[in-house]
Figure 1 (cartoon, rainbow, N blue to C red):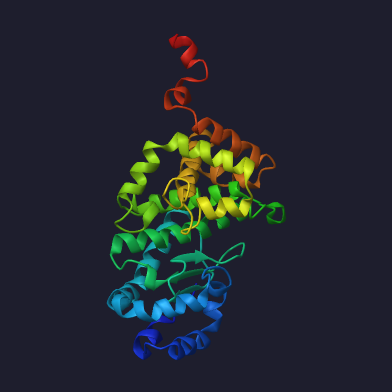
Figure 2 (cartoon, rainbow, N blue to C red):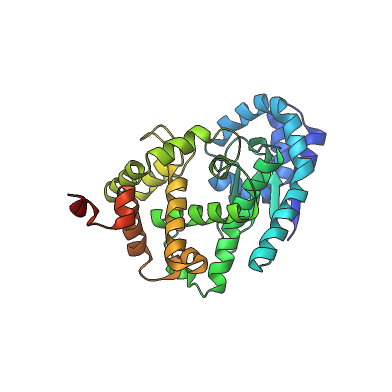
Length: 297
């Protein structure tokens, strides 16, 4: 695994101009390819915004850059000890234009990019987002080792996204310590979001199922998984919470490894729908079964 630091160049040579930004992107074009293809919508507008924003975040970008290699190595070591895996793909550390904060590349065993202008330099937040992204890579490695036929996977199916985000969140919780909300927000702002998700879980899952039956997969991604969505309930990325509840349920039912590798099974989508239907029931009905209310009467 090689960690590519482009941030030191950015800090040492920074000028608040579009010309500098273009030089930076050209100098490290291979490290920005995936970012501009999939993770920075409307890049010209974002570049203009970024030039004004960078000076406000420069000290945190520098502090984050000073810490990130050590934090990555700690996360990788913890996953290696816990799951006996090796991470061999490259890691790219960049200053983006306020698009995505971090992402895995569109590969079976993926490379990973971290965008420091969007990350907190506080240790517990930084380690959780690193653990989440490496959790995605771990998920694919474990699935590959379990004999996955990747040609059969529906990469752009909402249930695939649920399992991916739920598994990455679950894995991050196994090797880091943080408040529960941090595993979804990666910073200090997630308490209200988590309280809403927990309080309204059944209604949220019911709405997700309705959308699954009515709108396109792209619209589902926008509403439930994108930082630009969240129009239904006023909170973005609630699909991450649903995914985590799904993986919790599956692990309790099938064990950790069988749960996270469920997407290799031919009945994967049917199984996820059954789990969602179960999770949208009132909690007492989940515990006691469908005859709970009949027996109460």
